[in-house]
Image 1 (cartoon, rainbow, N blue to C red):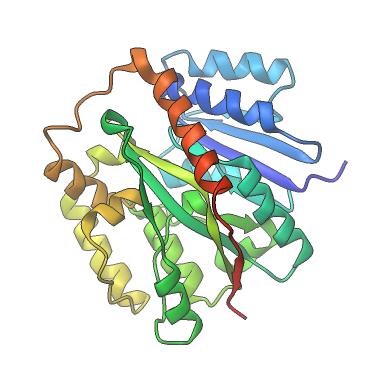
Image 2 (image 1 turned 90 degrees about the vertical axis):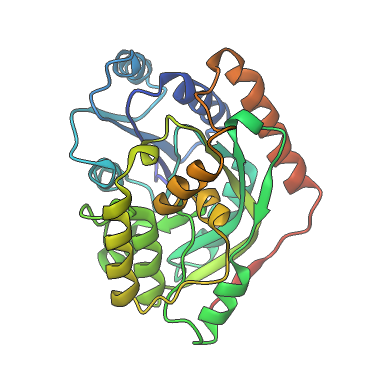
Length: 296
């Protein structure tokens, strides 16, 4: 059977979050879709849990070994993927698979499209009743008109055509802000990007995210280099926006501003919190009329 869509996951020692994410994904998986998981040699039971799912043929490809950094892990998953399209699934975020499939169908019907983005939702784990919507439509429209050489977006909201990797490449393993650099590169290369005005993902911020321990000095240095290389002047979005897109520099600044509320999550309530998130994103997508905006 031809594989139309590969869901890829890179994970390390976040079993409580991963179980919820995989339970939702497995329940929504359709024929012609695969699940590819790269584990960084976890020590919290993740490796054993995934091995069992692989032996039960619930997940299709599985690798557990040390990796050099996040970009290295995600690149391995992208290279393993067999689907026409690739969708990144972050183990502690929330996804609307109905919206993802709308994006999938659009890309399959339009084979020249390299990437589909969507609008963005985000929330703090310890303040889960508050969900922030955001959009990159103004930046996308300016980019379409040639007014911006590049623009940033969160890769958690992105579907990518596997054959397009030969042009846009993989994640830059030298970058801590790998998703930020990748977004600027994709747009700077003038890839064929389509913007879906719905929401296919909700980003969840908490201290166990790998980005919370990133080196701020290194991030600032890499940000300056990337901005010069991709002619990126920034935009007027505030720092909480960067957090919502899970861009690394924003998560650090956002954490420092919210230090009183962003404490270690109480995982005893994790199932109820994520159930709230999944219901919320489904409700938001149900109540709106969304469309695809073309760049060409």
